[in-house]
Image 1 (cartoon, rainbow, N blue to C red):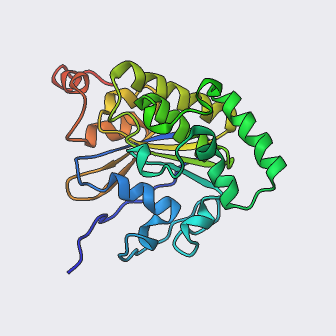
Image 2 (image 1 turned 90 degrees about the horizontal axis):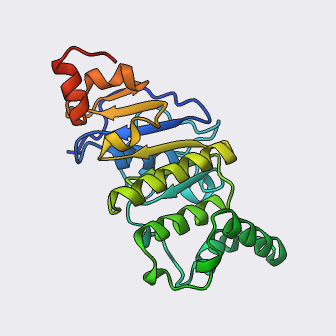
Length: 237
């Protein structure tokens, strides 16, 4: 018998908003992201009942390489998605994969390196970068394809608090500049709450709850300490 990842719930994420994905470990946060770019079910296997629509495109019908034209995905461990040794080559990889002409590719790589302030890292070995630098390179390598949707799977889990805040602020800047729809899963919800327009919470029973933070937080069992304190004192929101 198969394992159920989601039992129910509907998400209608408005364009150009930031949604925080939350839930206990193993609840299905990463699976939710992978449904949006087609990695589920194309690479994971399994069966999906219902529909998934991303700006009118169906990731169940289209392979992840097709969805990559529209959806950028940054893994929890950036090293897992790096293909090349150096920063410049890694950023260019997606355009090479799509057969972009050299002159156009060279121009766009230069533009993204400047936009992300990575000039000083251009020729560096990725293995010698800090955790925050690796996250920025991973972001640059997906943003060079100009996606409409940006998915990040626990991007701050391996970063110190200062660097984590810098990366989240940087993602907010990207959202504003490129008019992105962003979905971020985070274990430390307190980092994301002040920035999120919506919360997608997957509970222990694998039901999905979606709405603005004030609506979803009362339904959550795992919340930051300040929310627990507010509940004790009957403070709302």
